Image: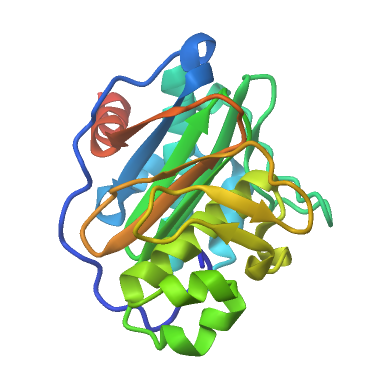
Length: 261
């Protein structure tokens, strides 16, 4: 559900959680995943100077200004977060978005040669970037919008899950858990969400099944990004992964200062 929506309600005004730890270096990130959370209002015109031509062209394909802003903020934040983790300049970060199916530059982000896995998600006015060296990662953020979830629940939930979904928050909890996994596996929404089975919304997040076989090792974590949103991060790793949520306004502000000096 990262795709554009023309009728989005105003985004909640609350700020994302404050940083709970410092971002790890690539050498020590194996058991940790950092999720940088930013807001569209933090994007400034001079941030776009951090992006390469292909990233700007990709963002310009969106027809709505809000969609373009989300795409550009995601690209900017990915470069800033990866650069800080790797100890390099943002322009030195190699970002590859080659699609596995068609070869176009609209696939999931890769950071070749860095040892890091990355994922980007945006909804409403919130953008999240997840980085880890532990394994393939997927992050999904969704604004909890007043939709008729009962009309679409059968396309998202298995029958046991459907019995546990009693409201909008439950529905979006299941959705974000599943989309995070599908982004980590690289399948995205090409795979039906009903192929996945996750734990009940009221329980700790666990991937219980994927297709007809045993599910891969997967560390799922529900993450608080802002009031009125649900979010989850999935890391395909056998060992536990600690998730640190970082307020991205600081690195965006620092990038702003450095470019103006």
